[in-house]
Length: 173
Image (cartoon, rainbow, N blue to C red):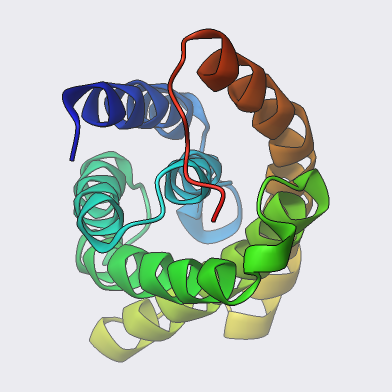
């Protein structure tokens, strides 16, 4: 992994960290997780196993450190790596559409839903949820998917421009 890639992943996750730390918990202290958007963006920009692994583990730790959800620490450490590699696999299966904002936005929506389901399932197994699963999914996970998808439609074209202007070639194939 090149140091410039690692640096850019670090910047994305730092922005995600700030967003995750300042966004308050809603129903049952579950947060709208914009850190996921940054993780997905890093995966799309640098789709190789090593980068995805580093991004997933770092995102899991950051989420665990900034969660306000009961039992959310371990749930985040479980959820983020699983979600990251699912999105990586999906992204790699759509090679024809790499570089397309619609693919990036679609993967963000799907990834956020997957992440929310894994997070809530892991939390439910380890502790009791502060509200019913379906209530948390409908009131936090689905709105988070909408917010993250909109954010990706704005951020992805910006990151494409930045990487092109800085002669950093993200992997489109």
